[in-house]
Length: 273
Image 1: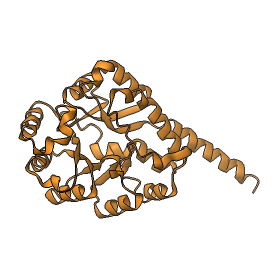
Image 2 (image 1 turned 60 degrees about the horizontal axis):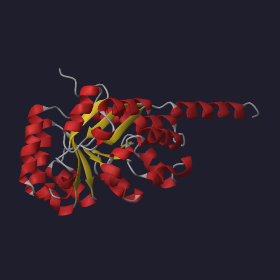
Image 3 (image 1 turned 135 degrees about the vertical axis):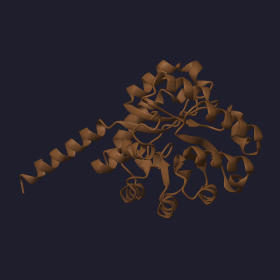
Image 4 (image 1 turned 90 degrees about the vertical axis):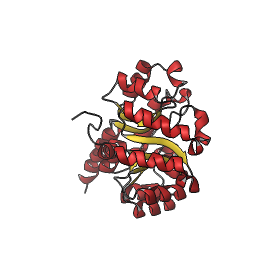
């Protein structure tokens, strides 16, 4: 028995070392019109690489920020088309027919892996503009990155049962509700942006740990750089994420850190055939 303790200690040290070196798939990054003036594209890409982010799902208001980052590092950036030209569109886009024309124009000119992050709640999901957005996503086989309540997510799946939905911030919902949704919808994934309750004090809350173990292939981390001031936090967020993931089995930690993002979006989804 004396030989077992050192062996276990060695395994734990190894697991911690692996977690500390995990690459990160950041599933929630914004680079909007006010960001590139404060954090130029080269600097932004430098921060992502410094953080050990190997791929990032990026959206911006307007879409020009997306294209600036993608041009700088096409190996790193996965563009997502946000239905906002400015932040003012957040509260009005669902009833603005100009958004439909804006998205159609961008989809003709550029390639994307997703639509969003968009804010959509309840019955608004069934309005004509969001419905047209879902139609465009289906036409181009794009993931829906939804900052939504349960009601809106359900409505999106009714419109497009085969949709792949990335639920931003895990819906800001309780673990029990997240579990219910994941059990019901096999094409639902969750980003953990601003879900600090799952990794308090470097440990994973028991309810969240059960969720990660039950659905190891359905979660991914995200920073949410919704203001320019949050861009430097990408480095700290990656460090913090690796710290709490030490509390997970190594295989689960790898999935949450980067493998789930790779699985959802593919190894090179933007690469031309």
